[in-house]
Image (cartoon, rainbow over all chains, first blue to last red; front, side, top):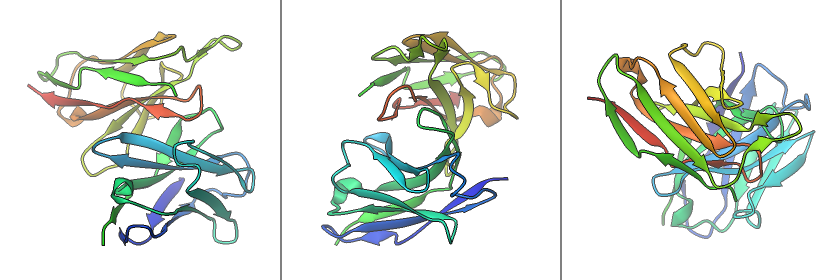
Length: 120
Length: 113
């Protein structure tokens, strides 16, 4: 059974970098078969795809966030991570990691999510 | 970007009755080379992540009750719950995976009347 679990700080100051990790169990992130994804959810914008990492390190990002986002793999720990720079209050959201079966595929399963608040 | 618009925003249905949620894409998500619609449906209950219900517009995920069904093609899709159960109270989302960035509908809140 594949499971994903997000971790990281729940509070980040404006202009700083948001850093989250997704720990994966039940499958290897280095298998190359899957796209490891970050999605966020806010009351205002709903569900927003942030991007994914695949094929041992290739990435694709939402153009709306591309200049500030980095998603990477840590195969030794079976994890992948999200970094979002220069955060503002608009980046306050529930952040989910999820697995996708390919570049054009659905998301399943999802982690439980982690609430990140941007505030001084 | 593909804009996904769901209707209604909220819906109240009596137990045992049919619930219908619509999703309209701003562009077709039907890929002509394989005749597949790149459209998924998710269910999100309070305090939980979205759960995949349906993919390819009409294929039920394993373990999803058969009262859930998806239909439609091109730009217009429907999620139907044939006989509403109390545990179906949730927010439902459609999502297109035809084009990047992948986009979601705004959600439809389903309640018991």
